[in-house]
Length: 453
Ligand SMILES: [Zn+2]
Image (cartoon, rainbow, N blue to C red):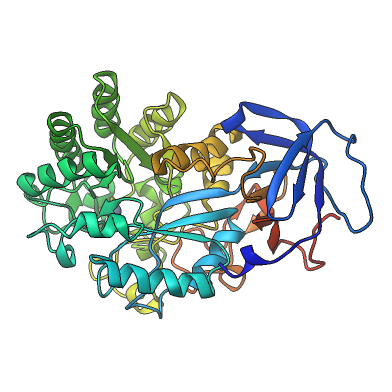
């Protein structure tokens, strides 16, 4: 990572509300950074500045560990017109993310060490955030034969997934989970049983019926999660369920955890915050008469946006710890993938830049729980105590949030190369105003560089 290697002045981030659940800390304090690491958290105003020190006034702001995303689609190699490490980093830092995990559905897929090594070298040169690779479960992600999981683990992958496609074969999934137990890495299965429905456009229900679109039932997700939980139990494998979207799925995971199954789960900001009504293109309003905004392809994704009942179950699951972490499923697509009929449109929305605002400002989840879900949640799944924390001695990856600042999502301000989000022209809050990676400021919301200094 180019920026992380830079030397920086010693710095004090003063008077912010420091929220770091890795240390059970939530109080007004100063954070002291020397070199590339956090040195200490001090009572406000007690640190004396020396020559050459930098001061960052965070009064009225929230100071958090840099966010960690378990689920970013980097689109590189193979679809660089949608996203590249540089633009994914630009999106990440605007959203407060300092570590992102790259999903392996690239071309070629991340299914062997040489492909992973090449991507990591590129990220080292071009990315301003930390990038951790996820390896494929099966060769070419075709679901026929396991990828060389040991070789991938040795190359540094932090988990395995065929994301975008499910592992349909229970036999292969059982083998993958058995290997994951040995390797100590999570197996992340995109839960969508295509034996139930293979072709669909959106959630099965009233909106799909009104729009004449093909529906995907909740059961396509929960049936596969139930299978995977049972397989995790008999193998002692490490199962991580990505983008949980239904009430039934939350209940299955809750029960599995109570039985001691080694399962963790993530929810996306969009499944927490918005519902299937967003397909009408009116920011969740239900129009009396369909208009030109309906069939909003930017509201098309897998799993699809669900109902309010599901949304509430996801919020409850996050609040009671059934769901461990929030992950963006940042899925950039070019305009040509979205300016078409709803059925033809690609699945996915960008998510890094709007994650915090969706969870806190739209879904109204308590900000301390959201920060926990974006820091301690993913770092414990990655089993990496060096990220998602402000513990002394760890890299100074820090995100500063203005809790009251509103901003409008507009395509010319987004860092991502793609602009596929149903939130375009929507006003949200809070806003990430500054992001540091290894003590180096990589994002400032205001033009004068060190915002609020
Ligand atoms: Zn997926």
